[in-house]
Amino acid sequence: MQRQVSCECGYHAREDDEETLVRTVQRHVTDTHPELADQVTPDVIRGWIELVP
Ligand SMILES: [Zn+2]
Image (cartoon, rainbow, N blue to C red; front, top):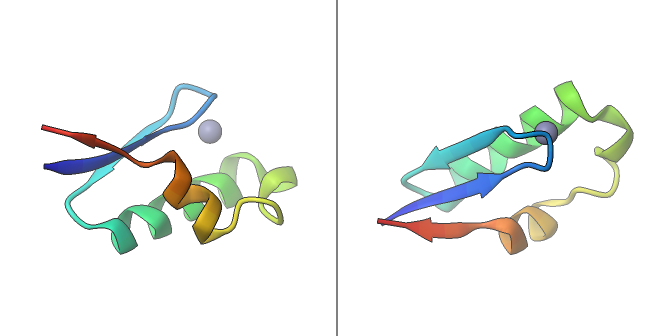
């Protein structure tokens, strides 16, 4: 099972492990949605994770 996060802008990130995915999504938020970067903590990102086969 992989882990996926779908951003509201249409961006998808998919990784095998949760910590890598959290870092990837944090980088996306910082680059693309800097106004959200303060609110989007690792715990928030973990709440967005879906498991995909
Ligand atoms: Zn986005």
